[in-house]
Amino acid sequence: MSSDKVGAELCKGINGLDKVVLRESRGASAEVYLYGGQVTSWKNDHGEELLFVSSKAIFKPPKAIRGGIPICFPQFGSHVSLEQHGFARNRQWSIDTDPPPFPTNSLSKAYVDLILRPSEEDLKIWAHSFEFRLRVALSPGGDLMLTSRIRNTSADGKPFTFTFAYHTYFSVSDISEVRIEGLETLDYLDNLQNKERFTEQGDAITFESEVDKIYLSTPTKIAIMDHEKKRTFVLRKDGLPDAVVWNPWDKKAKQMADFGDDEYKHMLCVEAAAVEKPITLKPGEEWKGRQELSAVPSSYCSGQLDPRKVLLSC
Ligand code: BG6
Image 1 (cartoon, rainbow, N blue to C red):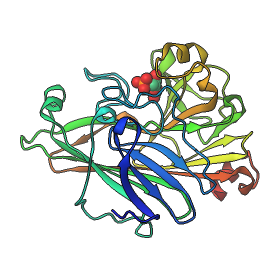
Image 2: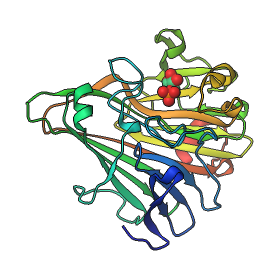
Image 3: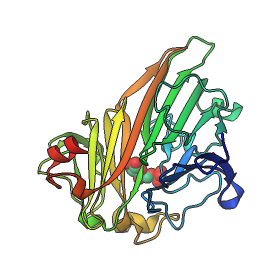
């Protein structure tokens, strides 16, 4: 890693936790905590923060940091006898000094490779050896790219199965002015109704109460349009068929110790995920899941709120 202005620099963050700061030549930046392997900041070239992190977030083990992009692995949600959303988000990751070759984004100098391997304690709660390699990269234009590579390194010949999500908290000006395009007419599992399956009706997704849905087999591009900010986030994903949409709204917000009572107005989670069909890896096999985020002025997208045009032109 370089300590030049452009590139990646290891330094101390909140409570002395290690973090890596990524900087691109045109001014975009990002921060990644080794605790959780978690992106906690992504700024455009005007220095505007694009991700939400709660003012009450606790940057201290064992609590996962509330905001940014927590990694949910080896499970999304709380189906098996593991903690909710798995343990990757509250483990200490290491810098991966010798990652296997990466075919993508050779143009960018602003990237970091992290690695998580299970500890003895982890093996007691999830008895599977794995190597989880995470690359976080900023493109020269300021796009944020996360690539996860998970390998089964078991010597016992046993496969393992997992679910996964990039639990991305987008920063929005006012949740009631936000719409998501790309998920309309899709089937979803509603976490607020015992994971029952429904079909989305209507032109676009807007918000006026608590939402906790897992959209199934979604397109690879989803647009999140912040009308007040005149900003559109475009989420592109690969290897991650599902998309979780979550906003706790006022009542749930008040129940979360690490979340401000009114902060639900300024965040929205849209999470590239693999939930409905868990992934199974045999020993030696590797899975790859990628998420790319761009933030563009809505005026760049001809047709503005027409999902097909936005998704084609951004
Ligand atoms: C979302 C889930 O992804 O994460 C919600 O769909 C959950 O059900 C939310 O409440 C937050 O989870 P946690 O464990 O970070 O409080």
